[in-house]
Length: 112
Image (cartoon, rainbow, N blue to C red; front, side, top):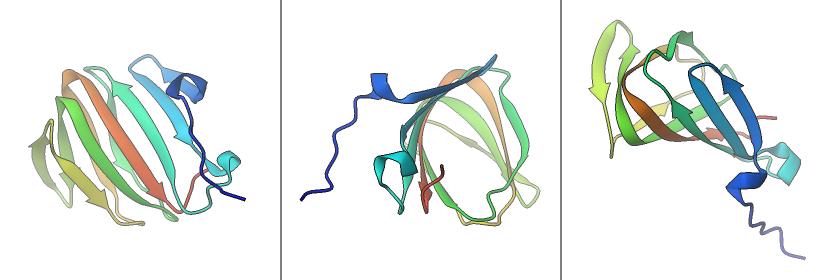
């Protein structure tokens, strides 16, 4: 039996904050142990000062908007067409400077 699944983004678990809408499209609940996928819209003013996932690598691809990405005290502006790879255990900051900032984030192994 095939493990292939087609998941409509409208069926994704929705997580919302005042400056963030995250659609948790692929998770462990979909029998994915190896990876999870979020599609998020971050609005101007969204900021994470110190993000760190001890058990997950993360890859972020930016579709629109701009943000400041800070790691090890160095800040750079990232925008459409940029990808960021963050190894597990690394701490980083992310601040949206031009929104909406739409991103696709993939985590390995899968988050619940």
